[in-house]
Length: 122
Image (tube, rainbow, N blue to C red; front, side, top):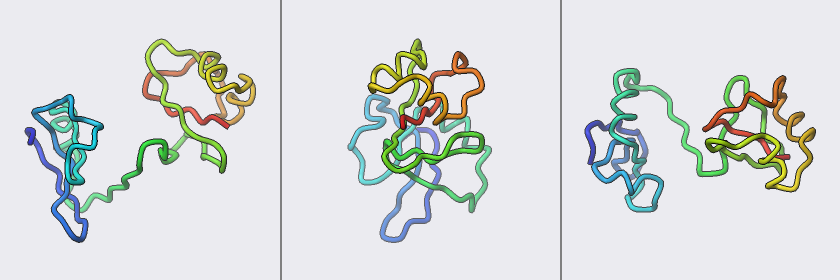
């Protein structure tokens, strides 16, 4: 267990979002349902979350659209931008033409993408 715990109201168990003293375990199937984060990240969000805050959890590849981000249509999926990637490289990686990726993401300037950004691949 890490430095902070945010409990979730889920029937049938005691689950939460928490820090970990084993960062290598983050993202792996190593717990009984909890969501592990780096201690520095949970410490940053902990004071901002009030009791009763709604939480939506999605599995990998099912990233929900956020305000300002495009909706994901059937047959599409999401690519999370990694440091150093360009939109052209991402489109090429999936065998898509650059223009279709730009349209699917409503990008005004395709040169301005950033690591961690969700890009819809049509």
